[in-house]
Length: 110
Ligand code: 5GP
Ligand code: ZN
Image (cartoon, rainbow, N blue to C red; front, top):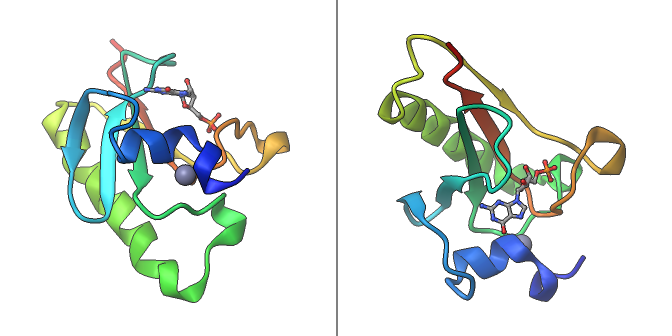
């Protein structure tokens, strides 16, 4: 999929309005539209990268930024102490449906 057709690029460019929970120069965070848990966030790098398979050496900071943002957001959403899961779906067989790299954060179960 090209960047022009990418729904997450459109969210990043504000072409599609979305409630952003966090934004900085590298990363945006918003709620998943179809949550799998009481808290389900998507942490998305502003750079269009298709999947984990497409990461290059120069993207190492992107991965660190996503994980550090996840840590901050877990605390902000008050699931840090109870616990949460972080995961990447990679390509179709791995469950990936949006081909712009993103980290899922789920938690908040009773
Ligand atoms: P994937 O399956 O690619 O790892 O995850 C894509 C996620 O993006 C899915 O959990 C899906 O619910 C979510 N999603 C897809 N389109 C939108 C959208 O337009 N807005 C939001 N907030 N989430 C979306
Ligand atoms: Zn994109």
